[in-house]
Length: 151
Picture 1 (cartoon, rainbow, N blue to C red):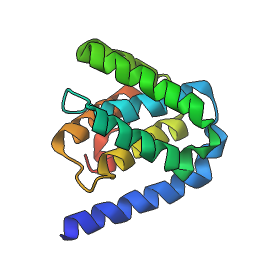
Picture 2 (spheres, rainbow, N blue to C red):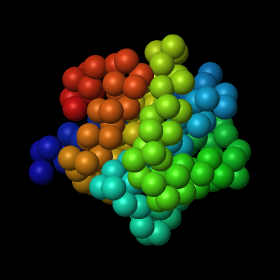
Picture 3 (cartoon, rainbow, N blue to C red):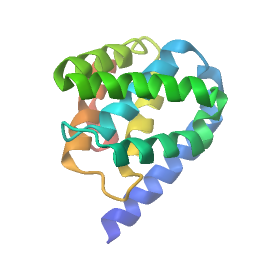
Picture 4 (cartoon, rainbow, N blue to C red):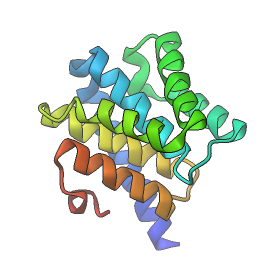
């Protein structure tokens, strides 16, 4: 139980930290990368069912950190990446990783993307190995060691 309590504390801390920083990241590449990591984490097991998609979309819409963006724009971007992953997971994953890698040059944005992936992965109280693997790949795409996030 201590592991889950520790994870919850880390996620809460990351969310608070992101809320103060994310306003400076209001741009298209950051919005795309954010929705790409959300879609990837939702589909981490290789499939994204309607329930996962709805829960992740609801979390995105209610997340204070992401309120700097127009909700309809986020929904459109999230659905775009989910559709790509549903049509062909491997190619959809490549497209998501490419979108995430666009923030590589901005370390603050890159870290925020990783933190959002962790928050989405831990939102249901179970940050499973498939979700961790996806976030690790995102870390590699932005040039950040997964070890910095205990992955």
